[in-house]
Length: 429
Image 1 (cartoon, rainbow, N blue to C red):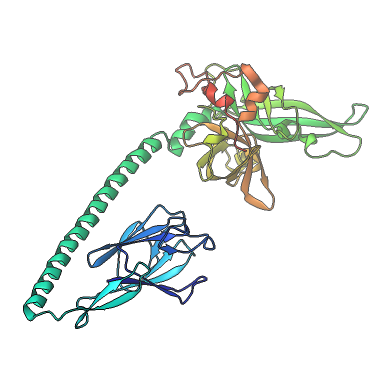
Image 2 (cartoon, rainbow, N blue to C red):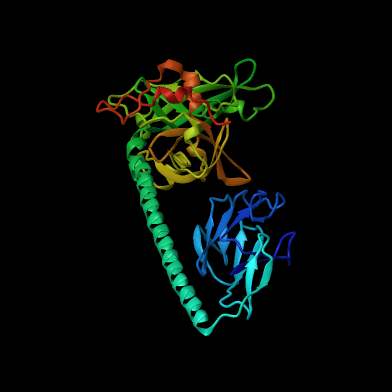
């Protein structure tokens, strides 16, 4: 029995190769029996292996980068049939597989194969009828034995595959056990997310007020000492939107309102820490903390733990006071939105999430309920893309005043926990 491989695509299109080997290795490396060479980059160096088991053939993928497909279906191990189409790597070379079964040699001859697959006929003596029956019986028993071996190999492969699947499932379950539902994330963090209202004035060189404006947004409590993180542009708008010539800005009043409170319950705030560069859109406010002031569940400044495709949530006050007026509500309430991380860079995290102007300064939370970033802007030409400031910059600004632990908030509800090991990890480049 010998195998015929017909190349249907690629540089060898139309070529045929014949093999008499028990095992045919496939790949780009020169030591493969079926060698595609370095020109076929979708084929791995040692891509797959075709093995003969009696009268049947098995193909096994050797952990290739781009996979092995049989008739368009990706496989790890599979039995091959005549005229099966094998694709080595998605979009890679396509071949047709077939084999010739030789049950009886021609009269007075026998068939042999050289290492290069060439078929040779050798004259032989004429066998008696009894001898031919004996040989046929041996051949039948040998095939039966080989079929048993093939069945055993398939069963063993299935058992090993099932065991591997159970092991992977247990690993994934243990990883997912750390994840919280979005409802749980909101329950642990919403009370610490605040509504911020800032009034500022544009004045001339003589100090005369030319214009008074108001900006609203979100923020979140990061320390029981009364520290609140938000966007710098929220309290210093004139640094990001150039005022008319001859005018400059100054902050007149900053107010903070906690969830489920009225506008008259606003708490005055001051700027405690300011980023040294306007490109870092972060400011830390300070308030006189009310009794039992809530703090966000945790912070995750290590960008190596933020990955493309991670699910995230943001909590804030979209549309600010406008939403309050539209819903005819008297008390401030948070809103939760969900999305995914679409890109992680050294100085920014990009989300596939629609944020509104009132979301600015709000926390971006991972599925463990930890803050990973602060919302700062979305793109006018792509409203579903939101840019965020990584939370790691918070520590560069506040330093040691930020209380730092790493378990759920204590019964006092006034300490924030993150592990010191994360503070020294370098962000992803």
